[in-house]
Each structure stands twice: as structure tokens, then as C-alpha cells.
Image (cartoon, rainbow, N blue to C red; front, top):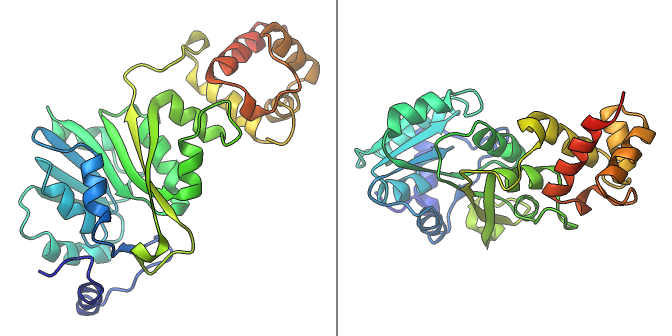
Length: 289
């Protein structure tokens, strides 16, 4: 078969299977032939590795993964793509398609069943509208995954890979930094896709940590991230105001906790580090009422 990045090949496939790209699924097919090999290479795939792909589309990235990994399992929500992938991936006996919503599939069971004894990388060209929920599910469930290499909107990539305590940081920055070591690898221009999106994309890699960089008070990760989300719920306000409002606490209690933690009440949420939020969480828990 001709290269799956060839526009005429894509149009022919779509026409033969009566397939129209869906804006609802955020579908943009990659037509730059240099992109998918770079993504697969960045994931570090080789013998002994399995690849979990999210949203294979017509198989442009999938075939690159299959050429490197022992096994590729792709999860696809759009049932219309099943016959297309049956054709485009027919020559790869190490490929398996699982139809379903990646936010609903039992990923722990899937990984155990399909990749027992293998190192696992997650790879995807993620739809922009669902980037954060997918990444947070992969990280929060502490799945047996070594790294996550995905293409996302450039603006999201910059926030995901920002350092906590810097201006670019958002609530998700802290979650990503807690669970993984992120790095922004390269950007991808709109013309690399069909149809071309209105924004620039970027490929990032998250190396999943075996141990978090901080120890949250009493192991209460849910409370820790609840505090961070509250802080960023009104990021233009001081952390004292946003935490008080976001958690429904008296401001005096928050001010006392900030003082006990050695933190300036005038700081903005993005100016605190992972360690600072641990200190604040502990100080809040120690406050009466």
C-alpha cells in the first residue's frame, strides 16, 4: 500500500469506506511523513516492548510502532475506522485493535493481559479537547507504563512540561510533575495534518516516576491535588484568596496555615512549588476548625 501520509491514499481510503473525518472526535490525520517515525523513535521502542496507542486513525503512527515494538494494541472509539485499519494494518501480525473509549476501557486489565512481562510505552496523536482527561487517567491510575509519548496542542504541551513554581505552570503542571518527568521534544506545524488545524502541535514525552518527588502529608494525594486545583481555580488571585474560596475555608485559617508553612500570603498559585503545597496541606490540616 502507498504511504498512509499520502493525501491521495487517505482520500481513496476514505472514499472506499465512505468515511468522513469527524470534528466531534477531533480527527486530523498526519500527512507529514517525518512525524510518526520521530514519535515512535522518541518512545524508545524495541525488543521486549509493547505499545499502547490511543486513537490510531488510519494507522499512520500505528505502523511505525508495529515496526519497532513486540506488540501494539490500539484503542479506537470510532467504529467506522475498524474496516480501514483491518486493511492498512493487515501486514502486521503484532497489531491488535480494541474498540472502545479509552476513558472507559479497563486499562489495568488490558495492559496486564496484553503486555505481561514487557515494558510499555503509550503513544498517541491526542485530540486537543480530551488531552488532559486522558493523560490524568494514565498517570493517576499508576498503570504499569514506562513512558507516555504524545502529540498535543503546543500551548498544552508548554503547560504540561512547565516547571512547578514558574509563570507557565497550571494545576495540571503539578500533577504531571508529581507522576512523571516531562519534556517537550519538538513542535509540529498545522500543515503536517489533514485537515490542517488552526494551532501548532507539539510532541512531549512523560517518563513515569516509580516514586513521587515529594511525600504528601499522610499519603493523601486526593487532598493534595484538591488543594492545588483550589489554588488554581482563581489563579489571578493570591494563593490565600483562591485556596480560601476554592476549599470554602475561612481566610484567616488559610493565612495562619501559610504563615505556619513559611509561605508569603501574597504569592500567586503558580509561584508555589510541589514542596510548598505539601507544607501548606500539612499546615492546613494542623489548623483548628
